[in-house]
Length: 444
Image (tube, rainbow, N blue to C red; front, side):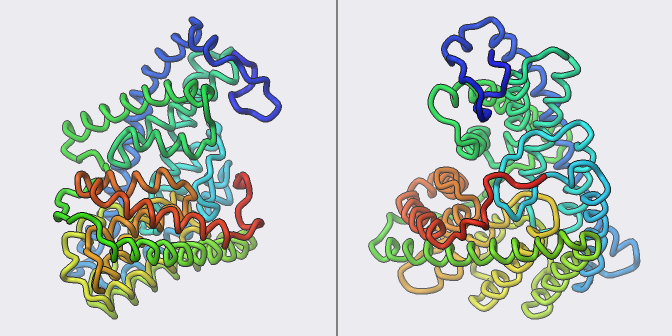
């Protein structure tokens, strides 16, 4: 194998067929299969810990302090503590807490062993205490870092190219079940990597193997512990009819709305990030307070739970669709505004991934528009998810799959509409994007 990672600048690309036929590649696959088990188990433990922290801090702690339920103001001090802990991890621990989510879904490579504690602590403080971010980016970083560290311990002389593939496979294993399908998680990493052709296949085979093993481990641990798999899923999706001409017009409108909204969220988060970087500790606490106040405003103005503004929105997607009839258009609009602003604040200062909040915002927007003539709830829900995801991620194929596979057979029916919404949003986002707002790599 080459002495440099596959796809590294200036590296002489190896002949993929020669590599695949080599004994070293077979050994690499066996190593990936073995490492996929502990890495996916660690990822499951991380998600379980995040879930327990959310329940402990938002539900159990208020009751232990004598409150009858969770007060609507509770997120304000909770998010201030989150800002303090996250700011400390980013400022004082190696690795600055990992990738900065304001730059979107950017793969900055596997963290070193010294950086892993900082990545984990910053993500736990952010996700466990209510920041509006998802767990996918920390999982990808932690999976890659753990796999890279383990393979260096097991085989100190491993070539950098092989080590890079093992690290990538660790990321595949860690995120394998999170998006509802190991194939979807693998596709996300594939599209984000920018690799193509035989080189992609060279890296993809170990990744798919690790992803499949990781998904089995998630299922097994979920059944054994009774905690579930923490996988994205909608248990009950209403039936939808075949697309209509009016719904294709709505797909264009949704694509435009998502592109404008997503661009606004991204620009605001980048502007806030510059200010946060100047005064890390104080500014991160201020951003936490901002998220908490937005959750309080939503709860007080609508009478609904403040937690709908907090967290990633992954667990709330099913309830949003199932309880669509209980949301008025006004409530949905207030939810979208508060969630979008909280999302921008979280992107600027906290640590986590951008996928799930964008899905939730898109779904809420689609449901709000479905109260108008010519658009049913399920197609609006699906188109909103796809259009907002591509606005924030710049990954069109992954965005289409996220929106359609989530809905099962009903998603297949809505797929033509989702494709139109995604394409419109993607093209418009690229036209609206400022060149300086999207660096090729995010600073570590």
